[in-house]
Length: 119
Image 1 (spheres, rainbow, N blue to C red):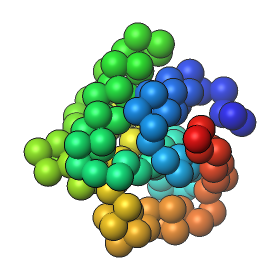
Image 2: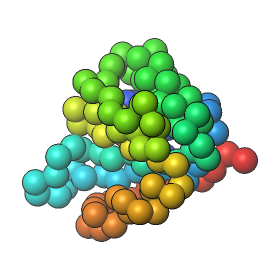
Image 3: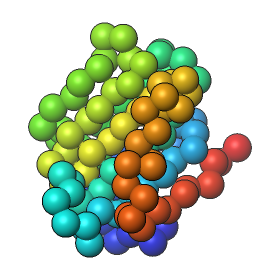
């Protein structure tokens, strides 16, 4: 992974632990007016998998990076869960919601890293 950010690496590991797919890291540090340094975007196949990924990200980030989310939004429905770590925002979608919101295209000028799926 190109980033040296310990929190981002822990988040990616947490996503992979629950077989999250199509992980994209948007490095926003060079963009004026960005709301975070990094966006980490991924998807799960169902709301229950999205919830499991969010739980895994929270636990892995706490253990490996010593970081807790400031806020988590979207867990009751789990179509799109957003986790705010201050400088890092995590977005976990079901595929239909990811296609609809298309966050990757909002930050076209960012440095994008696509993490290969493990399986």
